[in-house]
Amino acid sequence: MRLASVRKDASPDTPGFVRLTGAVERESGEAFDIWYEVPSELEADLSESSNPWLVAMLPYALPNGETIVSDLPADATLLENLKGLIAVWCDWYPQYKPPTIRIPAAPLAAEEPFNPKSAAFFSGGVDSWFTVLRHAPERESAAIGRVDDLITVHGFDIPLDAQDEFAKLHATLAQGAQALGRKLIVARTNLRRNGSLWVKGWGWLTNGAGLASVALMLEKRYGKVLIGSSYPYGSLFPWGSHPMTDGLFSTRSLTVKQDGAPFTRTEKTALIARHAIALAHLHVCWKNGAASNCGICPKCIRTMATLQLLGAFEIANPFPVAFRQDRLAGLYIETGYEEAFIREIHALAAQTGHLPIQTAAAHALRRSRRLRPLVKLADNLGRVPVMWRFGPRIRQWCVN
Image (cartoon, rainbow, N blue to C red; front, side, top):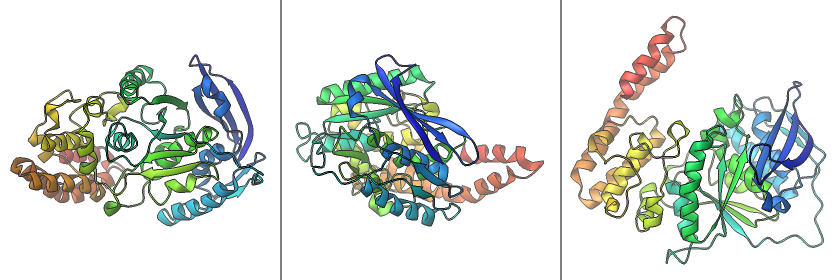
């Protein structure tokens, strides 16, 4: 797999944006473009190295252990870090083969650049709001630092063709950023190409790498970029954004760091509940790539249950429907990993003396554990000739 060329043009789709395009050629003969767009005012901040392209090509090379080649140098620290990342990925997922990287290391400059600016990725969800507030000392007395910019990416959670939905999300994120006095930067990318691990492995493999590639695309602007943690230290498992791997996308001049892993989701939500601006613009739902919270998906229901326990709805309510305990009780929890969030709600309900929510959470846990073997059977039936049509029906009956 080879980075054949890199070109910079005005965006053909978005006025006022500049597009950086990498032409990639695979050993199979397949050729395609990967592109990133940022506002034209940031053109001087765009990378001139192989760093973002190297990260972008890794998931393509992983299934067959392809060799990654580029004439553009890459940061020596990043090249070393990615050896560790590949080792972790192949340990977590033994079906993949370690890619070979043949990219020259950029020589150490006499005076290394220092970029004082910092940023945090900002989706409007619990994890990102928590990270932003912990780095807004003028808003949060227990802040541990400060960030200058907030970065949101179009093409990850909301597809590129859903322009109206992204415009709605951008509007609410911009209001939140403005209230905090931070610059909101929109980046656009086609990185999540259909059929690749960028799509198929987004949750369990590539989401941290995707965010890191955007940070590396803007590596001349920042000295530090934060990624809000997905899971707390007590509930870690192989995942695309992980405390062990996110930092391995760092270079000599840019530190990529995961933030917030010492805290549970309910602890993060409790901090958000103290800030009306965060509550009003909270966006946790990615159902069907929409910009609004549906109020009935598992992620919405979990967040609403926590906010109900915290009494936050008296301050603001970003959901279109009222919280219902029966929806929490009827949740099907897909994996043991997701159980951690329900256990947190159960513990908070016990702590606050809210017996109905405590009972509903306990019911969801018991019900899901009973149903998982049947759901697994239904999924297996879905792969059997003739029987495949019954599998999805059985799964739907179990889940609903």
